[in-house]
Picture 1 (tube, rainbow, N blue to C red):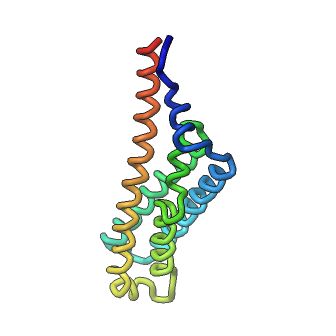
Picture 2 (spheres, rainbow, N blue to C red):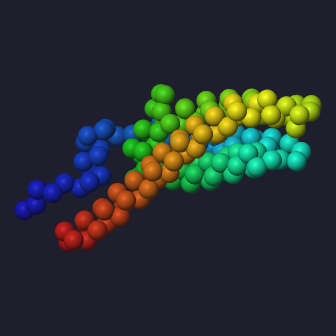
Picture 3 (cartoon, rainbow, N blue to C red):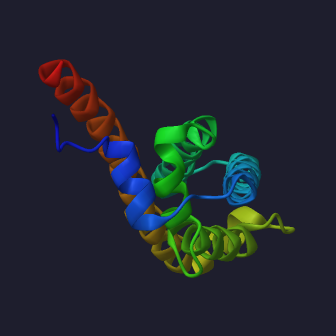
Length: 161
């Protein structure tokens, strides 16, 4: 006789079942953020004679896009449902990221004389980039946490059997 409960069942009992429509909505949000990241990267590439800070900004946006693409590919997996629900909450990380990326995109949107304007918008753009960096790190931790949970479950189930 065993009193152990399946870890998936424990999560379901504690947090309730996540409806597939919620997962679809989170995946769609992540997909939209990937597209925003691509657009912002295009804006940065269009600025003539990009300086060091612009290249750093481009690197940050591309790294964020990579994390978002990983999240998008994992969104519908059973062991990711709780993470996706938490990320998709109102005022959650995805909503914060969307706000920062929209603000950054607005600041650096192509304009006539963009390379002349850059010194005036640089500080604001870099503040948004710093916020995006912090959020990206948290998203990366969410991916790592899910991976650790899966590994723990596999080790735990193997040791119990």
